[in-house]
Each structure stands twice: as structure tokens, then as C-alpha cells.
Image 1 (cartoon, rainbow, N blue to C red):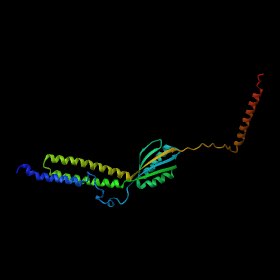
Image 2: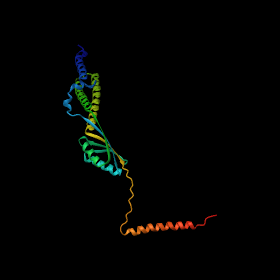
Image 3: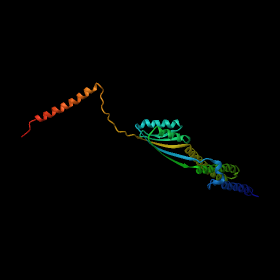
Image 4: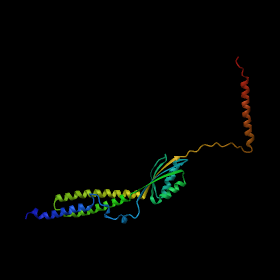
Length: 237
């Protein structure tokens, strides 16, 4: 029996294990969602909230500073803001309602637009894909230990690289979804509040009335002198 005949059973077993790992991994094609019951994964729906707020203030910049401090008091923070009155905030979901209620009480002409997106299925699907990819990587590492030829080693390592990329992608997506669920996005637009200028009626004090009426009298005398002067100007004939 030659060398190739002695090694062929091992190589065949390794190939069988490799194909079995590929079929059972669930990385490609996509895993079935019914492989694990969703009820055990998430008893509550996973929601991502986005809020747009419009309000008015006499002064924009002080109001922007006030809103940022209010967000920080509820565990949030500002992602971006401008002196023109636009603020992008992240607020913990559990504090979102009370934050908006407080902001409404401390603002003029307040309005808000709240939207919610259910990401429960997307989150659970990503979790399952990640778990299956991790199982696939573990299986491939076991198969790599039994590889007898360079060709077998390179083949398994190539598959390991693909699986590792999938794991990084699913981990990144889970991190993004978790952050979006935990921290709601709030955009606040602060507009200048317009107020008409009201002229106050002059009300002199007790000692001011004589001076006030004297001022009015002098004005009438001045108008009379001007009128007489105009009448005395000779007219051309």
C-alpha cells in the first residue's frame, strides 16, 4: 500500500467533517430563525425612538446651553449643537419621557414629533447568525488541527477568514442596535421668539406734571411763532 492510499481515509474524513461543518454552521446560507425560540431571547419588544422637538426662546444661545445641561442631568449628552439653535442629543430610553416633559414645561411654543421602530426581529436574527458563526469557527479550528496536507490547511484557513469577517460584522451590528435601543435620538430646534415692542405711556410723578404741561405749552407757543412768521413773509405779486 503506497503513501497516498494510507492517507486517503484521513483526508476523506477531514473533508467529510469540513462539509458537515459548512452545512451545520448556518453562516451561509442564512440561519433559520426558528432554530431558537424568540420568547427565551427577548420577553420585551426592542424599540428605537427618534424625536424631533421645536420650541422658541427669547435668546437662542443661552437656551441651547440650558437644554444641554438638562440632557446631562438625565444621563444624556450632546452629539452636536450650533449657536443657530440646532442640538442633537442622546437620551437614555428610560429617561426619555421625563426629559421631554421637563423640556416642555421650561419652553415656549413647544412641539414634538416622536417615531418608533421595532428592531426585535432584526436583533434576534443577528444574535442567531453570530452564534452560528461562532460555532462554525470553533468547528473549523478543530478541523484545522486534523489537516494533513497544505491544501487542506489553506482551504480551512480561507473558510476561517470568511467566518471571522462574518463574526465581526454581526458583533458590530449587535453593538449598533444595542446602542440605538438604549439611547434615543433627540433633535431640538430652537427658534427666536418674536415679541412686539410696546411703548409705555408717559406718566409723570406729582412734581412732574407742571414741567410736563409747561413743555406742552412751550411747544404750542413755538408753533404759534412759526405760524406768525410765515404770515409776515411778503408775497410776490
